[in-house]
Length: 188
Image (cartoon, rainbow, N blue to C red):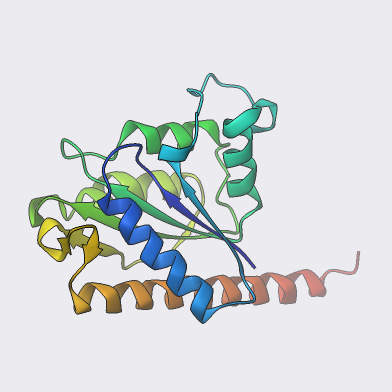
């Protein structure tokens, strides 16, 4: 199983910190999985211009191809100005409409306060649904107070990350099994 952790911002450290914890948990719990962390801050990504994702080269081509080859994706995003960052939205714009068909996608959100809790429900989940994702319905929401010096200090948050990892993998395995059984029914 190929799992991508996508840290969806080019600034700040909280989302990257949370995604690092998430990827570490994935690798420890599921060592047989092929886990890749993509931190958008580490790449030079082109703006979407309407081309097919296969036509992009360099960092943009690598990121779109890696996401398209994944079985599951855990998206980490900060909330800026009551919205997801443009860098993350650009990634969605680079991909085809059905990019997440047959993929499980889960969400981790970092925000300055609880006032931004519903941004994932109002902005991110509709985009993922439009792109045909099978979503883990619960997501991890981490506030400013849960961090100290680039570390997560809340045991509750760490537990929720562990649960998100488990739910993502179990759902991906379940959907893969269902698809295999359905495909086996066809005689060609």
